[in-house]
Image (cartoon, rainbow, N blue to C red; front, side, top):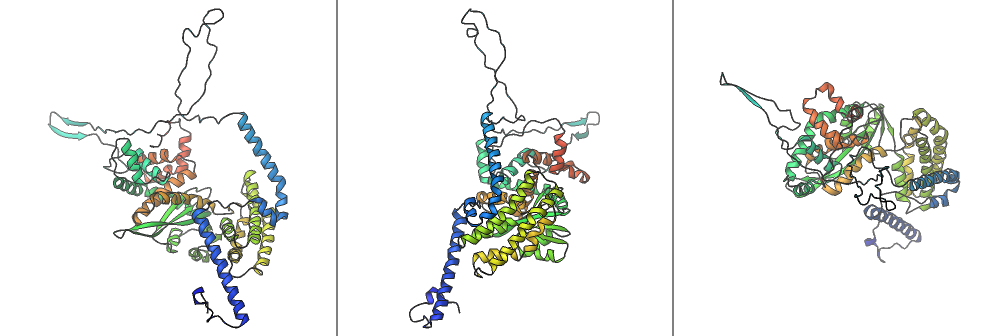
Length: 516
């Protein structure tokens, strides 16, 4: 029976020395575990989010692993220093050509043009131009839709009125540009609606936050066909990256919140969309329903809810080395030597990926490089993990990290079997940052319906950014064209196809600056 500290006193302690030793060891293990949990919670609450480890610390434990990188790192540092020096010599960065230019001429007076030597007028021989970036707040204006009415004087009737273009939200007070601005402000810039309410008030426009909330719901309903099309495209990917994060959801009439869940699914290079889904809980029913019909690689964390998909044999598990690294990083407070050794091994694996990226290798070349360099490293790392598993305490944080990797070793090494796979799942984690940042500002979703609204609009914003598309320009144009577009032409509104069609057109004026 496990004893607690409150159970112990002089009268209850055993007299047997061996039992006392076992009790002391048990208490020391509990103390070490509590210290580990305390350090972990303190870091999560007050520490930096970046998982940085000084390279010199790693070198103390695995010098032989890192020495071979010194020449490469020195060369990279020298190259970076050269770039910095070149930037300093060439002055500040040039302002973007796409920005509109307003020419302001500064000239000499008639008296200043006279030559101080002979008194004659000096001739203009050139000009000197310097640039200064300026900002003008966005302007709110009213569009009047004037519909002409006609009637027959002879018949004194047959009244006809010119039709008005259909709107994304019929009978709505706002146009597509303002709808897009509210959506981008909340789901990209993470501004809660009550702050937007104050911002618009400074511009002389009274927009209630509840009204804007209704607009976002109606926007999501209008954009749902496009989000569904993105989902269909993602499901045809050879690889899907997925991850999830919790969100507080307000319980109506109780003044409390419960936990809902956002999931993101990111397609491969040929289907570069990030589609969000909302579920009221974190059961496996959500991802199983969303991924129905998918066949290919699924790169995710070790969530057990995906096991049913892997069991079919149609979905292949690919684990994330960033998650593995995090396990050892968090455990390093209790076992510095072993954890830093593991971090050094993982660092070597990432060095190979960095080499492939810098060389801009294609899929086949990347696979060849991994087979040549990563596979031997993984073999040596596995042998080291097996050896350490015989020496580490079974319930220690270090052993938990080791077991996390060893138990999923096949899925951790699978990225070396195909050049289209990534070493980690950072693509989906990056997409989820929008939720994490927004959660610190708007705090919670108002309801499950609000979570579904947010999922659609997060999908729009994240997919546009993933394709290098400016979200306001794209979303406002989509909302303008969506009511009249045929279902067969809906793919034209996807961010990648929209970008391709607009890049060949005459450049348009820049989008209005955000209202601040």
